[in-house]
Image 1 (cartoon, one colour):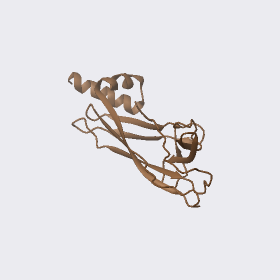
Image 2 (cartoon, helix red, strand yellow):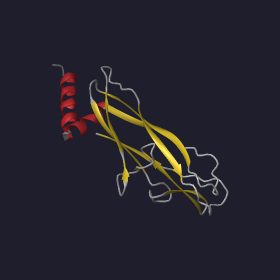
Image 3 (cartoon, helix red, strand yellow):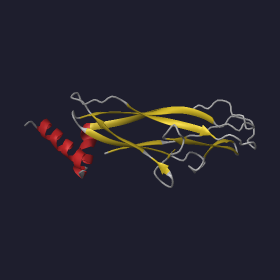
Image 4 (cartoon, one colour):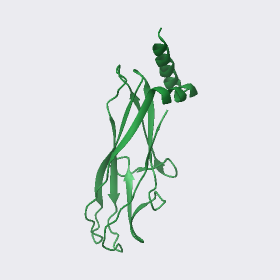
Length: 166
C-alpha cells in the first residue's frame, strides 16, 4: 500500500471512529468553506398581525483526500443584540425582533446549541477525486407580526456562521 493509500485508510478509519488523529491529519489533507445567501425581509408593516418570512441558505463545500467522510457542524451567532431569543435587528437604538430557524415550521432556532437553540450537522463524503457536492442548509427567517411600537426605518443585523469540521 502506498503512503497516500495508508494515510487515506487511517483518515477514513479515524473519521468513522472519531479518533483525535483524524482531526490533526484532516488539517493536512482536507478543507471546508462556507458561503451564505442572506435573509432579505423587505418591508415590514408594524401594524400587521401577520409574520414576515424570508429564506436564505448556508452552503458548505469541502475537498481533500478521496473517500474521506468529514463531519461538519454549523452554528450561527446571536448577532449584534447578543441574544438568540429573540434576535434583534437594529436601526440606531431602535430594535426589531426576528429570528433564524433550522426548519420551515419555525419551531427550532438556529444558534450555537446553547439554551433552546440548535446547530446543523451533516457528513460530507469526498468522492474519488477528493471532492464533494456542495451541501446546502436552508435558513428560515421570521419577523413576528404585531410589533406596533417599531419606528420606521432600515433595520439590519450581522450574524456570524461558524463552520466546524472534524
